[in-house]
Image (tube, rainbow, N blue to C red; front, side):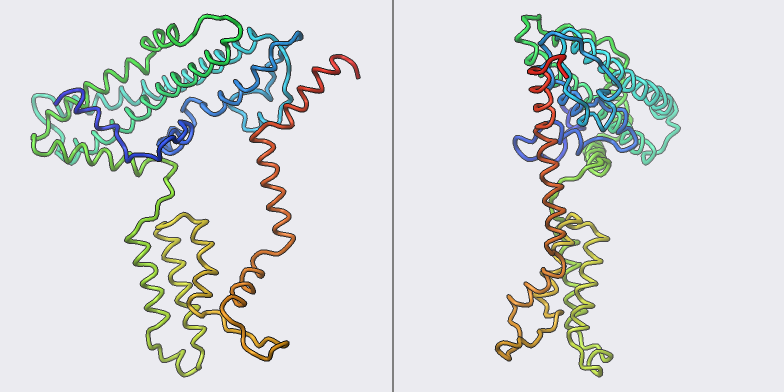
Length: 361
């Protein structure tokens, strides 16, 4: 096996083209180490403050501006020199790297002990135990690789935002420093251990071992891509259809076909929820569609015409029971608030007022 072959361990199912790295990091993060990853999105939000940090005055790196605080978007956009913003940026980067190093060193030392048992003169581990160890090592290598990429990308953004000051780019010097960081040393040790474990396995089982590691990484990610899983989706809908159409004596005697169809919709919905064949929000939106399409909602008599409701009228009635004017108002307010926070409109307004008013009340 070569290093190029071994790099296939970290390959995952291709993500959507042009997907932002912050989303990639969210999808591939290992849940048990999620708090130890580089705070990539928080660094990006801090860098957005740089264009307003060049006016006179003092920049106060208060607790509300901490990169680890989720409420940082609520902090006022303070003015100040680039130098103090740079100091805050690298202080936070050092803090994140310390967390990455702690996890990397502890896990690497723990895995090395087990690798020694698997690759020593007397193999003390079974092939199943070696495979489990290889998968554990794959998760650690993914953790270190993603963090290295996050540091490189955020430093590129930092250099781009600081270009107006005429400062030398920081990426080359910081990347050189990263080579000596404990987690970078652990990356090289982990690559070597992966090769040792592959050599400890029969050659014909190595491809299967790599595939198993890739599958573990796919399942380990805290985020998931919103793609439907065809088999559970088909099984859930088929089970609901069978329940809705099967000749069940209890429903036939009561002459309540709508009740049986409603039970079928319930079975299909529960199946979709348990199997997670589609995202939860998609399952929720499917409920009124299935209810109307299956005839689970009995039509009412329209007083004006004296006729029974048609399918469009039933669908409108079902949706009106789920969405009324008050709910729509609340959801619209939440969306508007999210747009304001995303674009930092309140921070830009505060910065404009501070720039104009200065120290005046």
